[in-house]
Image (cartoon, rainbow, N blue to C red; front, top):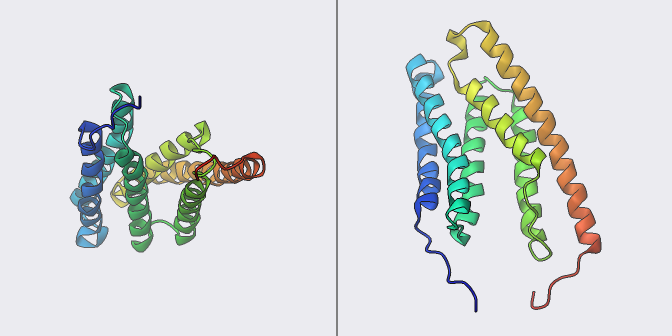
Length: 195
């Protein structure tokens, strides 16, 4: 007998939806007064931090309480990429982050997401430890760039650059590793019956 499906509305999914709803508020705060307001930049950093923390909490809570749902599995990565993508694009639009960095990260994120979708007929490709490290580094680096670095000691700007460089390296390396793993799975896997 199969287990009853989990209801879509539980605390974990409410947190995920709240994270999606925070994205436009974050974008507004980051762009307010042309991105040159210390107060609004601190508000944007706070919103980004809250959203990043809820990304960790909702998944942990769903697994701990056995409330993992198809709705949550679908929306959680969308919410994550929406937040990260919005932050990167807006920081580049403000001329505070080179566009090539934004393009490299977004191409990797969207490419791996599409690849995972096509691999679903064979296997669910879980996040690797490197992939989780990539998410942490990206979130930390972006959080630093969202701060009003123009009004802070120069050491913060150096730290932001170093962390973003590390995030970029891990992003590319893990992306290539996912592609290698996917190619191996595709060569050796057979499509389950009924698909």
